[in-house]
Image (tube, rainbow, N blue to C red; front, top):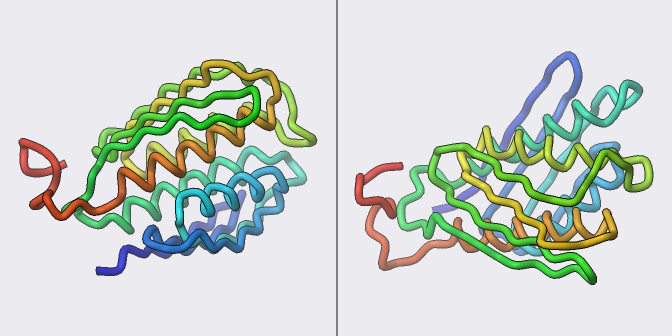
Length: 195
């Protein structure tokens, strides 16, 4: 069964089209107009083995906020669609991702109960022209639309780029585990019989 999704979102602030294959090879074509976000999503696709095509046009003359948040929303919607009923899926994933001096600990549950824990040393600063507070906004959008409980804990790190990169790579690895199929699982992995 192919686990793919296509999402299109158009608002007064953004126009986004996204294609996702969670059983891909890590190929990506990402064009959001936000250079740092493009970089994070390209490495997210590569390290999660997700094929990702993404085109976004947003009101960047205002700032990057609407584009970053709405891309997170669309990526969340795409994951929710692609995993379908979650039959045979491992559901849980965790990964500790080092990036030079930074260490991000990612733990997630693909359970249809959206919740974000975000403990990082990222402050209201910039990486180039990118507002680092938008990393959290991106994952709020993703969590709320994918139905994921996501804990992001950065134990330490001093370089903002390294911290953000460790987060995106770690989430990719944890999602790869959580969305992978285990043939021992009959139906969904829950004593309730549904998620």
